[in-house]
Image 1 (cartoon, rainbow, N blue to C red):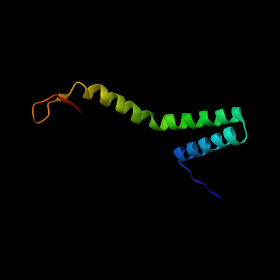
Image 2: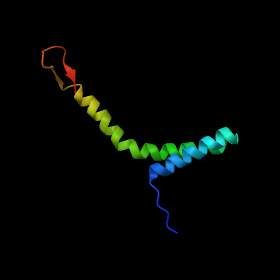
Image 3: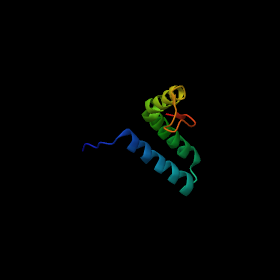
Image 4: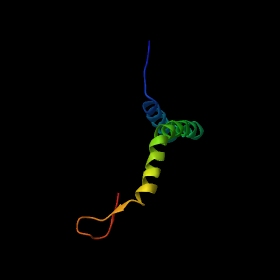
Length: 76
């Protein structure tokens, strides 16, 4: 049997079980371990997007453009 799942889906499943273990079974150490694994997967998945957004914010602040009425500049 072949089973296919995306990394994000795997991370969501890990978080779901981490929450169940924590709340329902008071199994704190396994819950923290699973949540940490999910955090690692999600962090890698959004790493490039996050870096892109940080660069975008940094450089957009330097590219201020006035609005149509010549009022306070808008930051793109």
